[in-house]
Image (cartoon, rainbow, N blue to C red; front, side, top):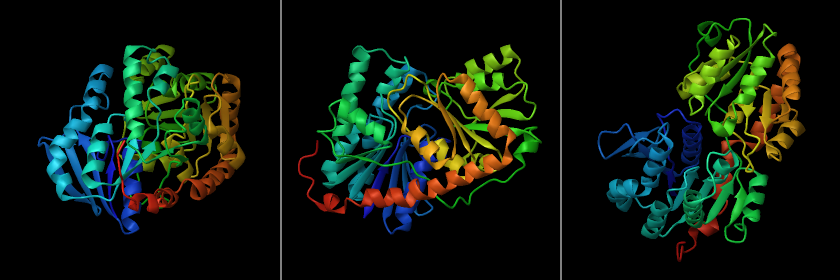
Length: 405
């Protein structure tokens, strides 16, 4: 098949979604399928650009800034994505018919584009739904119920309606769809996040020496540093572990909370925590290969549930996981049943600290839990498994599309 993958962020951008989509596309390609990826790119000077990268055809379309932009600006620019990509990419789409569309979301603003492409090609669409927006923004207080929220909920429904199958990332997310009356309207299944089991492109440097972390037990956090992550959990943990001379916290990434957290660290005069800017994927993997404990933090108010992509990187490099999460999250069951780390609920500050001290002081425990994490990764979160699941609906894809929603 020729498969189009639509995503709101692709290489060279340093986002986990770009890496996830790339790994998925490469695996599709390895299994004999022709892959086209389309994504917005605010760094382009031309309206569009087509390249071939590792056997993948990539159509990038010039857009206004989205990632890192102010909230109102980001929303306006994201709403325009469908029309921008359709206008610039229409000649390409007309001459490159695809048999299946795979949409990787958190963005809920591709409905118009997907609907037009389905009509053009008479094909089906598989939606990989990771974040549930606007619900997470309401849960964390980023957005209040009202006119703007109702607008986003309308866009959310239009977004879901373009898909023939929706793959959510956890069993608890199925409950969300059921509780909100979506379960009877859409074809839903759980599609876990994934990673490749063979990372080759790693920049191998002595990051401990480069960052002055020799002889330290490094508790590492990589990824978005935003409101939904409730990074105060980690700042508080670092503050509680000040008396441990071996433990050091390293946060690598970007996000809306970075300026506030840096100011807090400076005010508290904390020397056991460092915030490092986002790095390339190859550098990120190099860091993961050298540090000791993988950190996860989620806001306690979240009512939707997810398995953060960073968790897969931790598991790949056999890092034990130390997580502080929202109640009801499936992540707790998976980590505890596989004995791949320690996990507690947001607000359990003393428990979180006790777990961190235990991991920091016991190298054998870290190794055992890290190995367990690697085992569950290969069993449940492999990219081969994800591709196989998406392709398992062959009869549906080959059927006449009929009326597109």
